[in-house]
Length: 550
Image 1: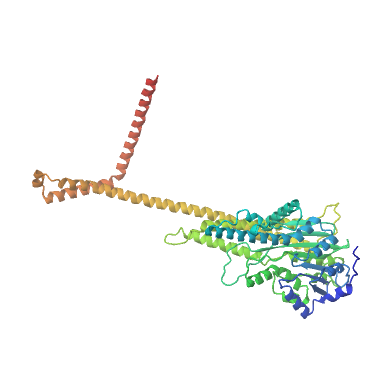
Image 2: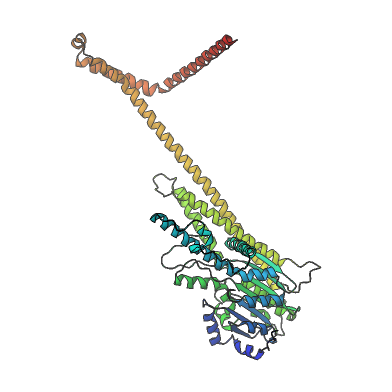
C-alpha cells in the first residue's frame, strides 16, 4: 500500500510570487501567452495578490491546505486538459464534481485529438485511393477507410475487448457531434460547486491580405466553475480551457489565434495585479473590477458598497462573472453582419437600376450562407441566455447548495442578459428579417426583369409581324408585275408599277397602324366563331357515333 506523501506547504509558498511587483507581472504576462503553458493559480485579497505558474500534481494536493487570511480568494486556471487529467480529477473529487462532468472535462481534448487523427488518416487514404485509381492499381480498398492505413486496424483506444472498443468508438462519435455544434452548452451543480461549459468566440486573425470570409468567428470551449471551500464559503473559481484547435497551420496565424483565444482570460488575470488595473483603465470593454470589491476597510461606507461579511463571496462571484463577460468577438459580429446586409442590398437593388452592371451571380449563395450563419449565431446567443437563467435561478427550498452567486455579480448577469437580448438577439432577428425581405425583393426583381424581357420580346415579335404584313401586299404586286406574259408586258409601264406600289404601300400602312386593333378584334371574333363551330361539330359527331353503337 502506497504511503501518503508529506505535505510541503513551505515549498508551495515559495512558488507563489507577489503579483503586484513589476518583474513578476511581466513574467506572468509573457508566460500566459506561451503555447505550452499549463496552468496558473492566483491567490488574492483586497490589498494583496500572488501567483504561481505551472504547478504540478503534488502542489495541487497541498494547495487546499494553504490558508492565509490576506489571500482569501483562489482562482485556478488550466490552459488545457491534455496532460492534467489527474489534477482535474483530484479537484473534482474535492468539490464533488459528478463523474460525468469530470469525464467530459478530461476526455474532451483526448477525443478531439483522436478524431483529428482519424480525419487525417481518412484524407490520406482517400488521396491514396485517388492516386491508385489514376495509376490503375487497386491495393487500397474502400474498407481501408474504416480500418486504417496499410490494413492496420484503426486504434480508437487501447481497449482489450470489442465491447469497450465499440463503446469508445460511439463516445468518439458523440464527442465529434458535440464539438462541432456551436450552441452546445452543459451545466452541472452540487453542494459545493456550480459549473457550466460553452463555446466562446474569439477574433479570427488576419495574416497578410487574406480576407475574412466567414461571419461566424472561430470558437474555443471552456468550463467555468464557482466553488465553495470546506462547505463554508464561496471563494474558489476554476476555469478550464480546451487545447488550442487552430484554423491554420501557419505559425504566425497560430500565435495570433492563441492570443485571441486567451485575451479575455489574460485581461482578467492582469487586472488582479495593481499594475494591470492601471493598464486597462482606458479599455471599457476589457476593464474588470474584481479586487476593488474587497477594499472595504474605510470607516465611511456607502450604501452601494459590499458588506464586510460578503467581500470574499463577492470577489469570487465577480471573478466568475468577468471570465464569462467577453465582448472581444461578439461586437464585431454585429458590424460584419450589418456590412454584409448592406453590401447585398446594394447589389440586389443596384441590379434593378437601368444601366447599372452589378454582378448578382452569387447573390443566392451569399444570401443562403448569411441566413445560415445568422441562425447559428442566434442559437448560440439563445444558449447563452439559457445559461444566464440557470446561473440566476435560485435554489429550491430543499436544495442544500452552499455555493451561490452574490448580489453584485447577480445584478451584472441580469444586465448582461438584458444586453444580450436587446443588443444581440434582437439585432440578429432584425438582420434575419432583412435577409428574408432581401431574398423576396431579389426574386421579385428577377421576375420583373423576366417580365420586362418577355414584353420586349413580344414587342419585337409584333414589330416583325407588322413589317411582314406591310411588305406582303407589296411583294404580291411586285410578283404580279414580274409575271412573263406578253400581253401584260406590253400593257404595263414603269409608271403603272410605281403608282400601284404607292397605293398598295399607303393602304397597307393605314391598315396596319390605324386598323390593327380592329383587325385583332375581328380575328378574335373569327377565332371564337371557329372554336364554337368546332365544338358543335365535335358534339354532333360524338352523338352520331354513340347512336351507331346502340
